[in-house]
Length: 67
Image 1 (cartoon, rainbow, N blue to C red):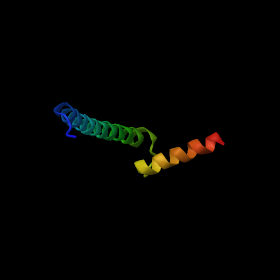
Image 2 (image 1 turned 90 degrees about the horizontal axis):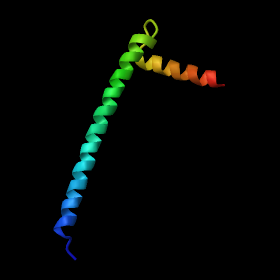
Image 3 (image 1 turned 90 degrees about the vertical axis):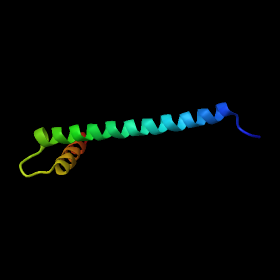
Image 4 (image 1 turned 30 degrees about the vertical axis):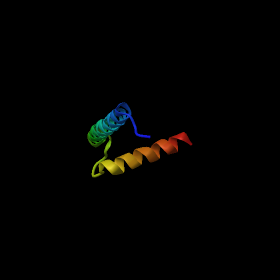
């Protein structure tokens, strides 16, 4: 049984909406990560410490404080 034109159009629309949502989501996450890294770099790093090292240190300190 062949699909109707309406079903085909609905499937194409769903694919486009999903692809667009994925692109927007990627941009938002990328933008947030850049802001987070800039904040950590500016305010939370210690002398000679990279952003990744500072994030790991902060995570470790948070886990230690919970215990």
